[in-house]
Length: 123
Image (cartoon, rainbow, N blue to C red; front, side, top):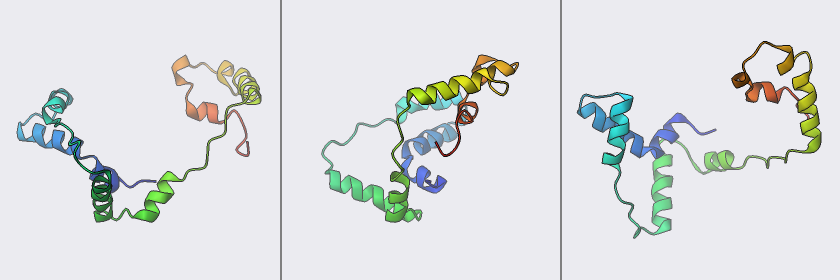
């Protein structure tokens, strides 16, 4: 995964918003929403892509996120496509005693955890 430090290193805009609202003494959600447009600066389209990439790598390296970390974070296995058999297994699970119809649940509680149990891990 990507460390919190690496995420913060690349999330400079959020830091600008938090700094501005703290300086104004208004660290609320509404203040952050109002500060967002005020902290937005025009992009520098004259920057060479290589220079920009080097800056990003330097920022990440400063928090200990190096080339190996980047490769690991961006080399996830390819997701497999959903098949009609997946739909049949999901339907059977949800209609069964441990699925949706066997519980007193609101529709909004059907989430990834429930759906993930619809087929075995080796699938």
